Image 1 (cartoon, rainbow, N blue to C red):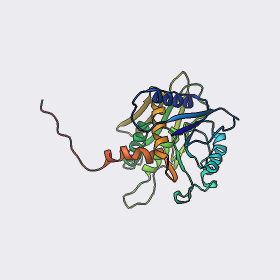
Image 2: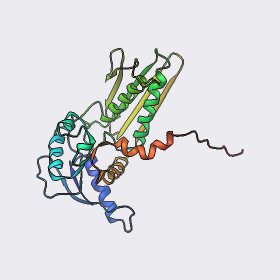
Image 3: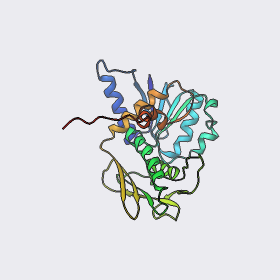
Length: 268
């Protein structure tokens, strides 16, 4: 399967290295993936590919999406700071009308997808105490341009969604959304730090008068995101419609939250 990459940043480089490592491994399992091209800003696409990764800047996503639609190439969007309204403008608001497969991913980590599920649950837990607070803290390297990170927005939105959930299916009360810290009443504050060389750290916080709950995720290497990006490229190939990384990750994570299976403790 031939792959193209838009972008020459940290994520694009990590994915290119992962593709080369996969190609050079004799007898590597799974479908063959071959990097056909990796383009910087303003460079013309040299040839058609089977699937492409957009790891460029947010303002370039619209043009890359238009190219993918014209070329009939499935696309994985891993850029941050782009306007999701362009998906609707391109006719991707309804999966059944999409001519190609498009997967959007603010983060390519299965661990972060797991964190989103926990964020929904923590938001629901906060609804038990109307006086409790929710917050998100994120830290990234000093060169990261956008704040808040796409992952922080994803997690904060999940917290807010969970806080409004009711068993009868209606959304009511809870937090209306998120905002950069300090936030107004009814909004979840998101604090961002840009310093050092940190790959990525995200923290969910629940605060009440009686207790504090902290759930955190730290990426130790960009190889984590490259691995998830490769899995996304393989997963989206041949599908039609608009998907998120959670759709792919859900096939792995979903069963973890199903049923009431118990684990027997080993005798001392």
